[in-house]
Structure formats: structure tokens, C-alpha cells
Length: 236
Length: 236
Image 1: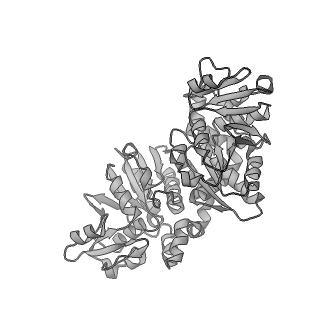
Image 2: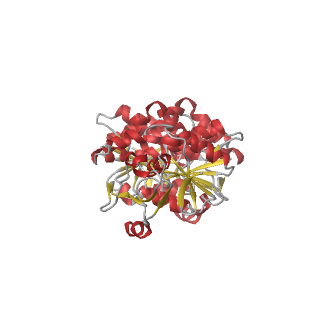
Image 3: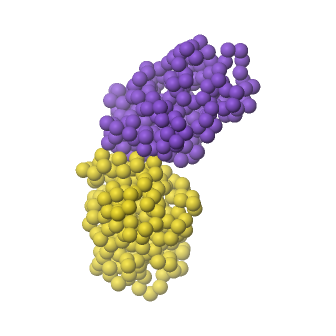
């Protein structure tokens, strides 16, 4: 089983995704939010690119969530902080979510056979689900504005570490995967500190979202593995 | 002092290079060959893009060196194996070198204020020279055909590790730099093994250049720091 790491959404090429299982990773914060919302009982997450599209897709009962430049969107019920997505808010509701990098990565990943959402929060469960799908895997780091983001690379390394532990067949990582695996293993004891030092982590702290960084740094808090079915992420 | 890592020659943007010191890294094998040739007494290395250009630039006494798809070029005196560039062959001679990825990276790096050639062979000396130039630094990994190459990332991590140790002012690494630093530190005890496992290392072994991988894996064998002056790399 081959595992390839895509460093950011701008870098993704079709040939890296076709016939594969893509695991989209946007630790700060889109995939952490999706994992949390579905774990807390949201019925599905529809990711859309624009605010107008989100509003147009809204049906009775749907919640609108998302951010632009890190901040909540005017008129939306929810921002992009995973802790806003507690069962009291989201249970039994569909969420229409629009974020900067995560949404773009999910849409690009649609060329794959299967699309999962990965984060530190559901790493073990996500690695296991990806391995069980028996396709080559693209660990698709959303990154930040077409740049590599440290927290996504760290999560890719963790996922690879768990895939190697869980897979019955050998895992062949590409060069970027090998580098991320080494980077993760070097920092496995300091996940939160690594997130705090990342460019996104520092930006979050400045915007007053330091608590989100802490929340997103929890490894294996959830067992839910969001999977794209049609245009909506759900838990199977 | 800020340090930014460019993952491959295709990714380099002008704004990442302007007003900076660029350290071009092509461990397997262009910058390892350049460092070796100048350490062994070559007077300068002129990197050119095409075989025709190399032939057109040749003056009496010049040696032609390089590779296409890993192999020596017909009619050239030298290939791209650093061990071919011993003093008996190159002392007192200028070398005109054309390689696939390294040459491209050097030419792109010309937008910087200073261009150095880095490799595992001259890591400590190169890190020190870069720090002394007192500009922000771009660690420019040549990569392989617009993909990240493990051995170049490893070298970037090593250079960053040494810069942090040597610099009087704090070093601020970008996200990719932080990841490469962690990756290097995790694998510092197994540099050769890491090169062997890399895609380039495996390709070299298949082409019969396993000895080159061993040679290029030597950390701090040389003190020479090649620096671009006009169109030619020399040792100051």
C-alpha cells in the first residue's frame, strides 16, 4: 500500500488522487471541526466554497457555519471553532460549512475513490479506516493559502505512523511522507507545543482562538471518521 | 534571522528569494559534486542548462561534466559522480556542469543577494557562511522533477540545526523548516540509511551509483563553501 503526502491544496494534482483514498487534513481547523460536529451528532456536513452558496443551500433546520480570515461570517450561526459544535447545538442538524483551505481541499479530493476527514482528534480511527479501504492513500494536507502548514504535516506523520502499525501489508511512504513521519516521531511528546509554534497556531492565538489550538491538539479524542458520500460528509 | 525552506525548484517564487541568501541544496548529486570539485582544486563551476550551451561555453582547459537522467553525457569528460571530481582530474581547471534539477535551482536562486551551494559534505561550513552574511535565508531544496526529495529536506534540517547553534541572533524557521528540523533530528544517527531509503537513493542504486550515495552521505567532510560570483561558483 503506497502512501503519498500532498503538502497543500494548491499542489494537488489529479494523478495523485485518482483511484485512491484521500484523507483531507486541516487540523486548524476545518477537519477538526467536521470530526467534532459529526461526533456530537450532526447528521452531515456539506462543505461549500462561498458564503452565497452556503446561504442558497440552506434548508429548514440546517445550520450555517464557517469562517473567513479566521473569523465567523456575518449572519452565520456558527464559526469554525470545534468547541462551538457541541451536541446541544448540532445534534440532529445538517451543517453547511464554508472555510478557506479545508473546503478547497475537500473539493479537490473528490476525484479520489474515497474521501475521509483526518485530524489529530480522530487519528487512530482514521488511519484504520483508510487502511481498511485497501487503496493507495493520499494524505492531503490542506495547508494554508498554498503553503505547507506544520500542524497538517504533523498529523500526516501521525496517520502514517498508525497506518504502519495497523496495516497487514507493508506501507510504502513517499519522500514527503518519510519526512513527516520522522518529524512526527521527533515531536510525538509535544503535540500541543508544536501546534502553538506553527504559523497557524500563532495566528489563531492572535485572533483569540488559543483555546481552539488546545482543543485540536487532543490526539484520539474521537472515534468518528467522516467520509464523503455524494456531496456530504457523514459517519458511516 | 528568518529561514524559509523551498521544497523544490518548481515551487520557488521570486518573493522567497529577493534580498536573501539562498542556499541551493541538491544532495544527490549536483551540489555534492560542486562542493567536491571546488574542494579538490577546480577553479570554478559554471552551471548551464543545456548540453549545447555547455559545449558552446567551453574554452581551452575547461572540463565538461554533467548528467541526463542520472547518466554521463556523450562526449563529456565527467559525469555527475562527486568521486570523479578528484584533484588529479580537476585541479586548476574550470568545470562546465549541466545537471537536471541542480542547475535549474541555481539559476532560479540568482534573484537572491547571495547564492551558496550546500550539501551534507559541507553542512557546518555552509551554515556558518550563511549566518555570517546576515540576510534572511532561503534553504532552496532542488528536489527531483518538481517533487520534494528526502535527502534535500534532510540537509535543510541539518543546516537549520547548525544555524540555530551558530547564530548569535535567534533563528525563526518557517513551518516547513520546523518540520525538516524535526525530521533531521529524528534521523541524525542514520544519515546514510535515510539517503538509501529516499526515492533518489533507490534510483541511484538501480543506476549503479550506490557508491555516490555513500559518498554524499558524509557529513562535514569538506570546509569549502561554493558561492556564486557572476555566473560561476567559486570558493572565496
